[in-house]
Image (cartoon, rainbow, N blue to C red; front, top):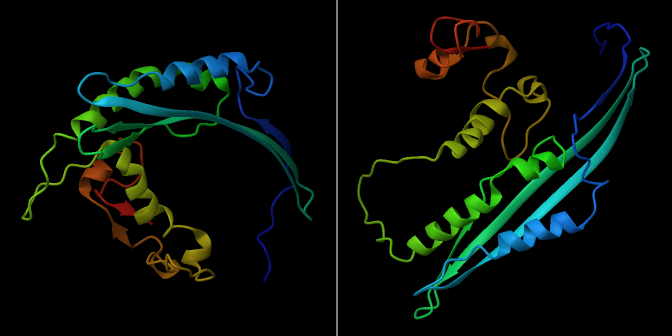
Amino acid sequence: MRLAPVEPYEGTWNTPVVKNPFEMSLQPKLDLLLADSRRGPQGAWAPASCRPSCSSSTSTKYFASTEGSHIEQSLVRSYPSFSVTAVDRESGKFYSRNSLTAPMGMGYEYVESYPLLKEARVAAEEAVAMHKAKLVQAGQKALILHPTNLWLTIHESVGHPTELDRALGYEANYAGTSFPTTDKLGKFEFGSKIVEHHRGQDAGPRDGDLRL
């Protein structure tokens, strides 16, 4: 197999970081985690336990090709998170609610800007409310998905199928191969017209569908 000819490229890219988490002292991080762990509801329910966490990662990647490219990347990611659990003193049942945060390619400024304590209070209230929630009865229901579920839907329905190794038939595992194969390029359409509507006026095809 002959690869497509490309011009050599040399460059460096670093994650834009305002506060490097690896150059900060430990105390402000501990203060945040301790403050978050105290956000449990009081009253008839046993105080909810809040298990906060905050992780940071850094990696350096270096790429060199036979065509003469030399590319270096320095990546920093921050991920504040927590899990709140509310326990019913009488029954011993418990419900948990995890934070809605996601890891971001940013420094500690992301941790400071995210309303972690505010969300922990809401999470505690929701975990307590679950104790009073009625059980779902069998039957036809209207399903309402939280917006944060959308990324997973797109990831599985569009992300994996459009991976080049799957589309070319080089990879097949538990997720299968792919339905948008190369023979459908430029003529296979899928997706709702609503999806196309929200892509914007300059987002590509105007026919209302996603087009390969």
